[in-house]
Length: 105
Length: 120
Image (cartoon, rainbow over all chains, first blue to last red; front, side, top):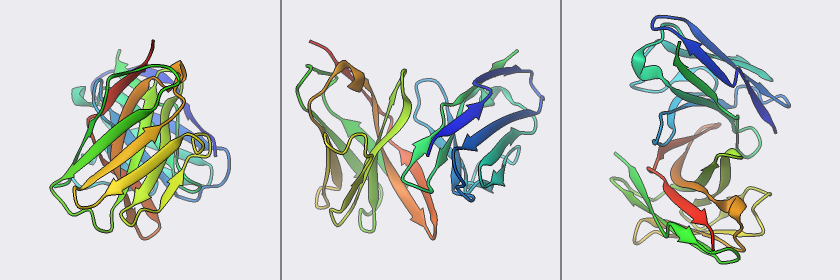
């Protein structure tokens, strides 16, 4: 299963709403996770099963979607949110999207 | 809380075999799935394979012929061997717990990663 993400990068201001899309090459139901990776660090799980926020993750992060189309949203961008975000499917083995780099405008 | 840490050589020659160790601390390895993932500039994040604490394994078909994952439950460690290395295997290698909950699978937590460079 191939995963695509758009955009590949984006620039936004503090307080902006940020939306990232992820598309699977076939129906994966809600078998999708989202990770955040800051420079020089390992990825960190934010959202599982397309929309379940992990314990301790701020509520400004959210996810939605099913089938082949998914959305990840940061409702109000904070300075600590500058990172690259990856989607990952677990319907058939495991595949990651290419990532979306979020930085400040 | 569970923590993972990778160890291994930073530099390996082409055609040689890479051996990495992941040390698990802060929790039991029973009912544990351990996984290896790598990240290179050219290919992004690539899942290599996973092992259950019983020793059963599943691999990425693209690496299945070259990757071997094993576990030593007494030492709370799991291992990756990757043979016939080329420059394309240059990457940061991560170990991660593969957490299974009903029908959900997540990689959480991850080790800090170890950079492996394949060069003569």
